Length: 359
Length: 262
Image 1: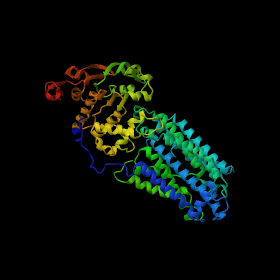
Image 2: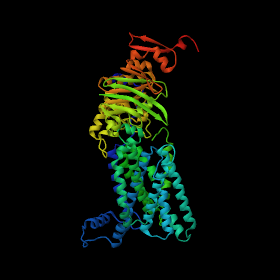
Image 3: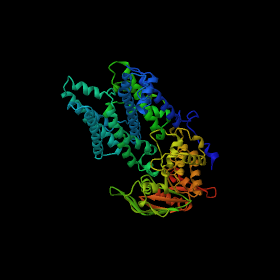
Image 4: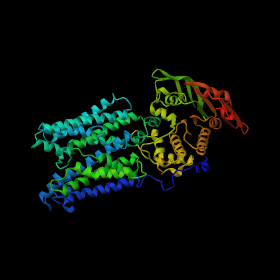
C-alpha cells in the first residue's frame, strides 16, 4: 500500500542513527549474569582472608550439598567461617540491595515519566535514615534498627501519598513535591537526633549508618529482608512491559487498554517496598537507583522488558564491585554511600553532558 | 460496524463544551471533523476514548455502550492516534509499535514472536519496515505519524480516532499520511479524524462534520459541506470556494485576499 510513495518520506537524519541499542536484551542478560557470577567468585578471593577458588567451591559445596561429609576437609575452620558467616552474607546482601535499588530507580523513572526520578523521590531513603537514627538513639539493637528503618520508610511513603492527594495540579507533580517536603521533614528529624545524641558512641554510629555500609551483613538480616524484597521485585518484573506503556502518558496508555493509574500505584508500592527493605539493611546508599538504570538504557535501550532485568543485574554488579573496593582499599572500609557518590556523580555528569544524546 | 454519538453533552465546571451532539460514522468511511480552535473537538475525542466519563448522552461503538466498557474492552473497539506523541524515553520504533499489542497480552506478559510478526506486518503495510530499529526521536514528523498509525493498527480495533494527523507535517508528508488513512478506510476501518484543513478533508473524506460552539453545525458528503456559506458560518471569514479537476478537489481562498482588501 503506497510503498513507493512512503519510501520518499523525508528523513531528518542520516542512516547512522539506525538503532538505539548496542546489545540485544537476551545477550545483555547473559553477559551481565556471567559478569555477576565471576565477580561474586572474585569477591571471596579478595580481602583480608583471601580464600582460593578451589577451597571456596569446596566450602560452598559442602555447606549446601554436604559433599565432603566432614572427613575430607582440606580447608581451615577459619576459612569456612570467613566464607560462610562473613563474606557470603555480605555478597548476597550486596547483590540483593544493588538489584533492589536499581530496579526501584528504573521503575520510578518509568511511572513518573521522569529520567531524574530515583528511590529518594518518595522519601523512602529519608524515612529509613530517620528510623535507623531513632532506633540507635533509643539504644535498640540489630534487627530492631532494621525494623525501625523499614517501618519509618513505609510511613514516609504513606505520608507522601496522603499529602500528594491534596496537592493541586498533576498527580505526578504532587507526588514529587510531597516527596521533597516529607524528605526534608524527616532529614530535619534525623539532624535533630544527631544533635541530641551522645557524641561519644551514638552519634558516630548514626553517622556511619547514614553513610551506608554492608560491613555488618548477617544471615539474620538477609532472612529479615528477603521476603519483602521478593514481594516487591516480583511484581516489578511481571509488570515491566506495561511500564513501557505507562511512560507514554495516562491517556495514550488508556487508549491502548492499560489503566496507567493502577499500574502506577502497584509499581510505586513495589518499588518502595524494595527500597525500604534495601535501605533498612544497608543504610543510605545513593546514586545506584539513578545512575545504573541510565547506564543500562545506553546498553539495552529503554524497553523495560529488558531494561528491568538488566538494571537489576547491573545494580548487583555495581554494588558488589563498590563493596569490594570498600573492603579492600582501607582496613576500616570506606562507607559505600561515599564511594557510590564518588563514582556516581562524575559518571552522571558525563552522561547528561554527552552531546546529541537523549534518554 | 459504526460509531454512533447520540445527544452528547459535556461541561467543564458548568461551562458547556459539548452541546447535544449527534452523528454516526460508518464502517469503511473517513469522517473528518472540521471546526475552529476551542470548539470542543478534543473534548469529543476524550469522551469517546473514555478519558472523560461524566457526559450525558450515549456513545455506541459497534452496538456496545461505551460507558459500560472497561478500559480493555474499549481499547478492543477503538485505537487512538494522538496529534503529537513525545515519549520521555527514546524507544525504538519497533518498541513503540509493539505497545499497541498490549491489549492482547495477559497482565503479566510481554510481547513475543506473534506480536513481533504483527508489528512487522503493520510496518510493512505502511511502508516503514526499514525504520523498525531506529530511535523514535530520530524519525521525521511524517514517519512519526505513520509509526503511531502502525501502533493503532496492531491494536486490531475496528475504529481509529486520529487527532489532527497532519498537523505539523509538510505538504508531502501530509499527502502520504492522508493516502494511508484513506486506504485503511477502504480495508474496512471506521476512521474519525479532526483537521483544520478543509481542502484535505474534501479530497480524503467520505463525510465531513463541521462543529461550532460544541455542537454539530452540519454533516454530509464533502461536496455538500465544502461551500462558501458553510466556511463563512464555521470560521466567520468570507471565502471563495473554487472547484478544480472536475470537482475532485476544492480550494478555499479568503475573499479579502482576492479583492486586495485588508
